[in-house]
Image (cartoon, rainbow over all chains, first blue to last red):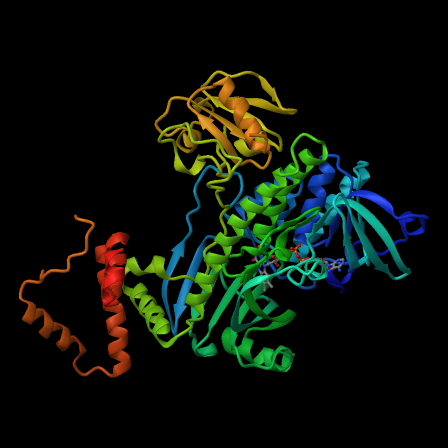
Length: 537
Length: 70
Ligand SMILES: Cc1cc2nc3c(=O)[nH]c(=O)nc-3n(C[C@H](O)[C@H](O)[C@H](O)COP(=O)(O)OP(=O)(O)OC[C@H]3O[C@@H](n4cnc5c(N)ncnc54)[C@H](O)[C@@H]3O)c2cc1C
């Protein structure tokens, strides 16, 4: 039987642009139909912006790479119209176990906070993730939305101009040129766009290799995350076992630096390693095996004139903490509403520089977290290993040491503290988690939830406060969402948005980040906040 | 609790404490002693808890008088 990642999802088809006398100009071209390029395309098309996605391939991710998707990306996917199938298919888990040497040192329950529509995270193969995104593209196409994916269209050269870019595209039937007002490069960690434009990609490459294997087995391991430091079956290294849907299990085995990658990848070498880990009597089948060298790097700037970089093309992290695809989705979430306003002439082009600032802030936070995890998992010196082992030995006996154990800190959205788009916090001593720059935490509202009500436009959220039904300022309309703490009997809304205050008014951006907040409505202040949030103050 | 690291004598029975410290290492190999020291350090650091104090302690242990000031 063919795996879904072996079947063309968007096979090559000749397009009339290939036969045009002069290069056709498109509004937005996205390079790469990976998770990030597809998300960018869907959001643009949903807002009515014409978009063409080009990919040199015609299939979803070969094998599963990303498996862990966090709450914030799931909330973003809800707005893109494909969160539900992912949550339905995905595996949810809360319990993790940590092993050191030949014994379990402790276990933990993540006990996710109540009052969110979406779970803290799900495990789902990247190929399903991409399949559901492609399905959503097709659904949008059926509704007449201006989006297409051109399979086996490989971008071979890029010419940049002040107000457009020109692409040379190779197809199975020869090459053609295409112009675009804007180009979004989502062409992955090895980004040819980055190379073609001669741009930097700096950071750390960790001197370590990991064998990543997805195996299909009928095993009665529970739905938990198991992490081993220095286990007998992989002496001096680490290992991870994690469940995915369809009886597929993710196994990561750290291999060390000085290895022959091609040799290690061969089934005759992989299978004995897995048997040593799983036990001789467990029957399994290899679905996918790969070897990775992890790195933490980013571009110095994500915007270069009319070319915008997002996802792995802009930044790369080691996968401990599941931050790659998760953070890439927050890139396009940040970018697309800004790009749309700039294209409509409602915001100055400089608004796009805030994409640079905000998402570089996010990338640095992710790189910091995953570098720290990597340093814990792979101690770089004799003394760092002594300290690491001391933490693990203590964690078996004393609770205090457990927070120091770092096998990956799971991805949470970053707060854009200090962003030029934020207005100063005017809800004095309000809850820190909803300060300007934060992504709005969800809250239950009777039989629904808060986030779906925010949608993807500017919102004036009033909680037990007066305010106009809408404000129009500088070409932007902010629609009011009037709530009361009484709408949520669990009091999560009050705790998350008001704290000790009796009322609150929030200006919320289309990406559901807080732009401004005060205890009550003030017309002058909120008009200024809207202008500031679109780069006009 | 003050947020300044104590760098004046503060242990009651300094000689006894020092003897306890040596006794704890008695009979350990170098590797076991290193591991023990690391565990002891973490236990003490957790007891202090205060990040500002821990920072000053890290600087004081480096014997670098300029960093001690910061
Ligand atoms: C072992 C492993 C485990 C991971 N686990 C997680 C996890 O649990 N959670 C998580 O969030 N992330 C995880 N990641 C990271 C995640 O896989 C990536 O962050 C994600 O795939 C990035 O998506 P992207 O769209 O930016 O790039 P990609 O998925 O790399 O897509 C790039 C696309 O661009 C296309 N392309 C490239 N060049 C051209 C060209 N010249 N012309 C046209 N098209 C081109 C490619 O065909 C490809 O489709 C993991 C990664 C690895 C390796």
